[in-house]
Image (tube, rainbow, N blue to C red; front, side):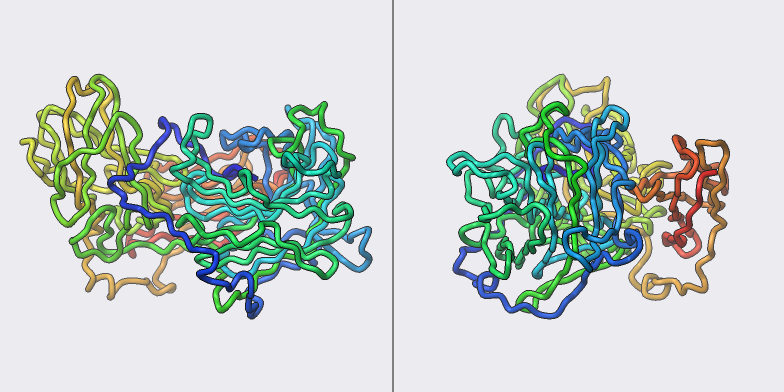
Length: 598
């Protein structure tokens, strides 16, 4: 679908990697190195979704509710024209294949707000994730004509923004045919694609640096008869080295690409979640305006099943959220310090430069790696960060500290901050010519020790950390001259020793107190969530099976509250809580409940 659909865009100026510091080589393999995807040995069935129940299984799928504007990405980055509604999702009998029940996603000419169309999209984010194997999707598309865009695809579970998290398009149709093809019906063309961040793709007009394998490459299947209203099976063969896309049509398998694709990004060696949708209009179709949509509506996309098999002994499916709490000491950027777990730049984290910094030449404080930068634009703001490729649960560090080595001129004021996956951010300030957080400002290497409770404040969700370290200038105190600085040995220290960890973690379930959590309707359009935990509390809720909203509740003493508005009679709200248990130093998830607005 060519655009990250579920993550917020950054508020900062565009970030760029600092390759000199990362030492990151993109992984690749020659087509001949492994032949498993072309001569595959298909093993046991790892997971399947048959879509045979009365309704959509919300323990597996989340139905989108919105047009993208609710996540500051109107049109989902593709100029799509529809409003996705859970009402357009059902499990139905297939009219053209008696005896088959399937997921039905229906596009309608229906005005919702500023959108002239409605349709449906579901995803398995936070519920089902897949890494390697052979993935099958049996589906039947409606006549796409001009304006319909069905797709079966995957996005990386990494919290990084698209395209750094990776995108795998098993199939998409939309009516835009490559140049040079004979004139055929848009219902006789289906393509596949893989999109990742590629430095070589960082050119004017492509500021996201999205590299597409389908760019000027044969990536399609053109059957002799229309794909409309008949089932075919789309397959992805996926290993750590190669990918192969195919279509199983009337008992015969056809490859979309002429040869397997090398896995040319570490993003493609991580878990992905699944998405199924039917867009109306957008970049992959010739329809940029509602008036240009001539596809017959209503139009329904049917999905009979999704299956994941072992491929040559490889393949893994995990259910639910997979983030495990970090303990002890966690290395954000370090070489030699002994830690319980750590990130490796270019493998599990990335170093970003936001603005006005170039590579410096200050040697490391320890080991072989260092964040060495030269400030190059006096009077302008600067900034950089270390961003994780997977979420980290740092709830056990609230009473600990972030420790780092830094060498920076004494007359430079700066901030050190952190940011969670919900875009909540907080920072502490190091004034110029003043010692703070133990850092002696003499221009040499010094040590800063920042309490996590202070840098996180009341709004940063430590259970879902993305940027584990940020450094940036102070507004109103921008440097007036060029200078060099370096940061090294960045450690989150919980203050709990390994011996203590072995004695107390995990806490027996019988010892974990259950906070009193509740919801109540406070007006015809609002619902109040509450929790009586002494620490922070988050509420995670969906409206009519739509996208999950995760919110840090407002804390007042031992009680936390949040009011959700914009509701209407009949809305079904599913919700659960995550709260901090200070006694056992861990985060607790409540069970899922539901309430209907009256």
